[in-house]
Every structure is written in C-alpha cells, then in structure tokens.
Length: 508
Ligand code: NAD
Image (cartoon, rainbow, N blue to C red; front, side):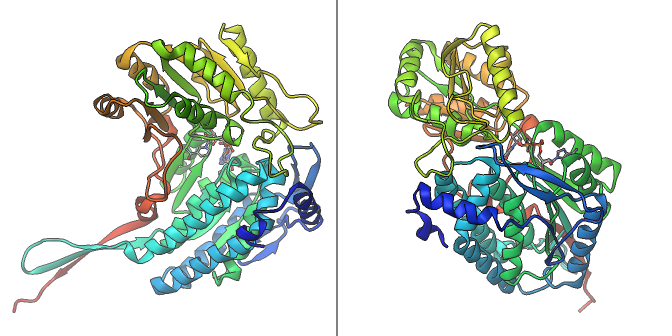
C-alpha cells in the first residue's frame, strides 16, 4: 500500500498491519540478489523497544559473509551491468525503485516502528517521503554530473572523466534506519557503484526489504547487498576490506574515528563520516517571534525522541529574555510531546531505541541534577507504559556549558537552556564543543545574523528556523561531527572519481 493509502490508517489498523508483519519477517542476509543464511548460521535478537518483546532472530553476518557480499558487489561492478549501462537506464531503474518504495510504504513503515520505536506518523509523514525524494533526486542527478575539458595547450586535448569508485561500503545508524541508509546508497548507486550495506544491529529489518525492492525494480543482482550483524565484527570487516573503495558511515564520533583507522590499516579507502552533534540554537533578545522560536526549540530537541544527530540540544538564550523563554517553553513545550504507543498515529513520542539507551539518558539526567542545573520538567521514565524504553521530555535551565548535559551528546529528549550576554559570548559558548554539525540563530537583525553565521563552527546553520531544508541543501558537519556532505549534488559527486585523459595531437 502506498503512502497516500496509509495516511488514514488508525491505531487499530496499524496494530493489525504489525501483527501480519510480525508473522512474516524476513531476517536473512541479502547477497547477490537473493536472501541467504550466514556461513556460520548465527543470529541475534531484534527487540521492539515499545514493549520489550523480541521481534525476531535476525541472521548475523560475520566477516565471511562480508567477504561474500563484497565479492558479489565486486563481480557486479566489474561486469559493467550497472556501472556501464546508459545513464538513462540507471535512472529508470532508480525511479522504479522509488515508486516501489512508495507502493510498499505500509510494510516499510511498520517495520521501522516495530524495530526502533519511531512514531508511525513520523515514518509516514516524514521519513518515507524523504527516502523517496532522496532516491528520485539522486536519479535525476545521474546525467547532470559532468566531467570537464580543460583549457590547455593547442596540441593537446585534456579531459577529466568522472567514474564510479567500485564497491562502496555503507554503515548506517538506527535513528532513521531507512533514511540514513538511503542518503548513502542512493547517491552511491546513482553514480554507478555497487554497494554493501551494514545496517545498525538495533534496526536490521527495513533495509532487507529495501534491497529486495531494488532488485524488483530491475537492479541487477549483486549491485545492492545487505549484511546485518554487529558493528565490531561485520561493520569492522567491511571497513577493513581491501576490495571496498569507500566507506560511508553515519554514527557516533567514537566509531567514526575507528573507521578512519581501519581505512589506514587496509587499503587507504576513502572515508566519509557523518557523526555526532551537540548543536546550539542561539536566541537573541531581538528575535522576531518568541512563540515560533520556542516551538522550534522544543521540536528541535524532542522530535524523534531527541535521537537526532542535529538535535538542537543546547538552547542559548540571551539574558533579557531568559525568564520569558523558560516560562513559554514550560507552557508550550511540557505537553507538546506525549510518550505513547508508536503504532498509534496520534502519538508523537515513542520509546528510545532500547533499554540501554533509556538507562544512559536517565543517568545523564541524573548527572545534570547533581551538577546543579534546574530541572523544570521531566527527568524520569513515564509510568504506565510497561516495559517500553521511554523517557519523558525533559527541560533543564541554568545550565553551564561545562556541565555534562551540555558537553555530551545525550541522544534523548533532553533540552538544556544556557543563559548568555551578547553575541560574543554566544559565539564562544556555541563553539566550545568538539562537535560542529548544526546551529540555529534567532534574531531580526540581519547584520547580527550574518556575523553569527560567519563565526559559528557548524556545517549547517538555520536562521529563524530549525531542521528546515530540502534535497539541495548539503547536510554534514565541521570538527568531530565528521566531514561528509549528504543530500545535494556534491554528495552524488563524492561517489565518483576524476580520471585525467591527456591526448597529444598529431601535427596538422
Ligand atoms: P554507532 O556509532 O554505535 O553505530 C553506527 C553504525 O556503526 C552501526 O551500524 C554499528 O553497527 C556500526 N559500528 C559500531 N561499531 C563499529 C566498528 N567498530 N566498526 C564498524 N562499524 C561499527 O552509532 P549509533 O548509536 O547507531 O547512532 C547514533 C549516532 O549516530 C549518534 O552519535 C548520532 O549523532 C549519529 N548520527 C549522525 C548523523 C549525521 O548525519 N551526522 C545522522 C544520524 C546519526
């Protein structure tokens, strides 16, 4: 069923879709165009974080399985069945792929919600439309990437030809399982590469269906392979593989640093990293609309349960409006997100991805209390939700930037409000972090906004909005948030390499 068909599903309908999906889960690896078991027949459990129930035992890929998948991807690349077909043909297959994702939206959406607890309304309203437009955007770009003929001496002709890289290894996180995987596989495939995807072990199910749909769209076997498994075995084997030309990784800064080491220890493969964040939103006293700004503040840190790399988790508020800001945040934000059943389309806050994450976030909240921040609301697991890994939306005020809750990526629904005096102090606090993914600036003074934009160390800056944008906008970080740029045409180009061809011309 397509996106438009499922928009009106109610809670009961989604539960019955979930029951059907549970009885028919595909859990095997997807290699060379078909589902298969792992060499060692091992498995791991994937758990529904809303209930604590085990959804399935998923086939666990080991290094031998990564070898098989990379061999299939290498053979497919070398055969030219994908890399050398006419750009328009590749485009058509990717358009069909996008259409099939739309037609199977019901199945994909429910897997996403069961596996990682994301509210079904978010998957249907945001994630899946973004997945489809990512595939379409990258398909559209295929014949827009041009090489060049350089201006060189009269007796030579020099051109730079853009070619695919070969086998691309994609390692994705669990917070937007389909979308983060698609930000990588769509440009990699569009550029003519073949792919081995290692999804996060917390959310292994939806990517398997995605790969199946690619083959149904006409994608040749071996071009897109999916191997589930643990990061430190399957992910590491992929990143160390000598036949992988590039690893594109989204995940924590800690693991991003390991990926760089693996590349150095193996074949110097290219590495593209999208890592963590601790993004500031700066609210100047002259901001244009307090209600709108506060709305962006709580949406920016409570949406997707705060499990967002670019979450605006540090809210820097200029002192003259500090009290008013906090009062408005409490009035509007306290009940804006209500933890509940993620299969209910009315629910806007599901559980965290698992019990470990829940405990980690609760510990960080406890740390914030101990360090003297003022807890305005939340701060605990909500009651009455069984064994779900829930955490209530939480607001801390009077936070200092040296406190743990301001320095560490919490990856949960926890907002920290930090007072400041004047733009210089705002810049200094905003940049006092190892991260540099995103930032928000709220002011009606264009000059002030521009000065802040120029001085803030972040890859994405929003002015008088937050988490806005479209596919043309590069997404990626400065500093230890990584250096890749997803979405945008540059992303597509980053999955190609330039070959210089120099022709010496015969004398006339
Ligand atoms: P993680 O780093 O623990 O895991 C990410 C992926 O890496 C998973 O597939 C995991 O299996 C794999 N992995 C783990 N150890 C590995 C190893 N030693 N070798 C190879 N692969 C390994 O991150 P996570 O908890 O899944 O995701 C949350 C993190 O992702 C947060 O830090 C968040 O900020 C970041 N993130 C960043 C962006 C971005 O665009 N910048 C987007 C989403 C999430």
